[in-house]
Length: 94
Image (cartoon, rainbow, N blue to C red; front, top):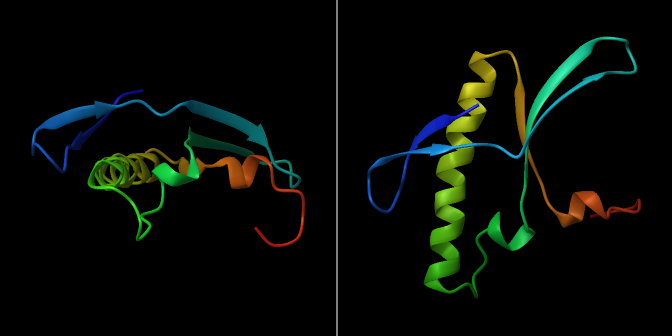
């Protein structure tokens, strides 16, 4: 699927394609579908010591993810971003 979004730096419309569409059965035996994006944590959170280039990457990602969240909701799906903190989580606090 292709999700249109407005690029925050050039103001033009671009297309975003999430990494995965996953459909699974929950422990309550209901079917659930999610759009999933996998990104390094540093590309998903603005931090104080980031360069302007790194901040721009995060801003672009936020624009994509905002539209993906809305698109998913309209289509009965959920959208989420997974980082290494989620993949390598070993219990306890993240």
